[in-house]
Length: 477
Image (cartoon, rainbow, N blue to C red; front, top):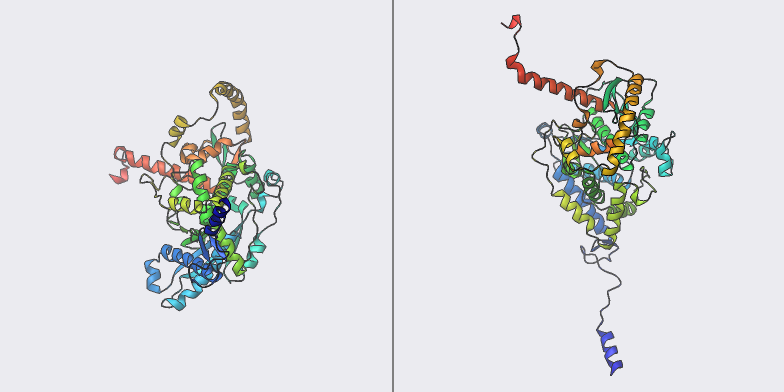
């Protein structure tokens, strides 16, 4: 009886088929598995390109003058050389070439400029970052330029250290930098010293930051600001970034952990007009990194390897690195993890309390007013038992640091100091990042220009408040 029951049970067991059919065409054998869906190669490429074009059509908003003239926009592609931006460049080219044959023979984009920022300085020139990342990197501009030449698009190759040039400002000629010593709570705007190269200034900034999380943030926002200024300088109305769904889901969790929840909807949205004259668009926001890799393999698209400052490091090296390891590991067991996080983040909307004038002078994102008071009320920066000893050591060293600080300054007049609190011009996350500075740092000219603009705006507001009480000149009587 036992043997009969066992055989009957074995006969009722259903086994999964070895191969599946494509869920779209229903005829070809499936070769690609995305989440719980199976596609053949042809249908996968059709669905992949369709999602991209849908995002582009949804985000592309033509101006009135462009509609009248029958032309589209002038855009700039932020091209890192990685798989995602490589795919975006290919699909943008196909979209722009195919559109004149499809819809009234009008190009979507009149001109496409490709911009690449070389980050090799972070791993060379004696930087402490090169020892942390265990790798050295040659300049990537030549490699990227070879890829862009296939499309005959104008190419702009930039170096990250050139963010310290006076041209990378709103005015285009602001020649002051900001020297900051957080321990002394001092801030000076100094004239550019030609003896100090831009490379030395950038390495001074990054090497004097003790936490890799803060270094990653500074590198990213320096690149973002450089791309925005370059797009504005070249008259581009739109900046295309290759952030995919996997990258956005990592940013949503990591930015929340860093205290950037106030600006999170702007930093992860598919399209934002926070910078007014330059719209940032992410047409790859619905594509998984796995989909991008499969598409590049099927179409033979080549990309270059660009390491970050946490490459080849353990997952706990930084918040970004830890979040990436956590989400990618979780996505292997639960394939809907990335899409769920990305779609949830897409539902976020900017707060009604955002004021356009309140822009962080470092990351250019909005900041909440009085966040300095809020930070002191809820943030624990050290163990209470160690707080007294820390304050004693700080008082002992403050007098020595203050004297040496002003001795080393290149300009000591009263006009060089600003009349605004530097910390009040920062968002919460940038304020936290500046708390891990070891020594004095040199911030780029666009930061010093932001402080100067805020100071002039404060003067205008003050004058407007007291204008009814000012005495008139004789000519006005």
